[in-house]
Image 1 (cartoon, rainbow, N blue to C red):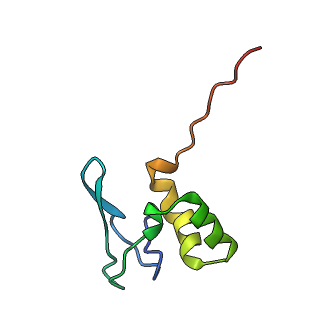
Image 2 (image 1 turned 180 degrees about the vertical axis):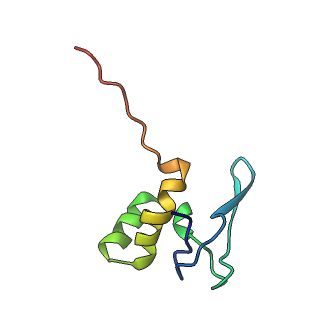
Length: 82
């Protein structure tokens, strides 16, 4: 599965371009000319609210674009022995 524009669903090459640490520019979709995925800059709570409201853009971000983002990777802590 590749990256998709959350607005129109067309494939995109990248969601953002990183110029330096902390300096990114969101990519625009070639088809609809809108920002390909604005949820990159949103808090998880905003995404959750949009998922509850059944917004298509939020589901496209969750299923197609979110697995490719490093900031959402879960870190598993080792279980402490007691």
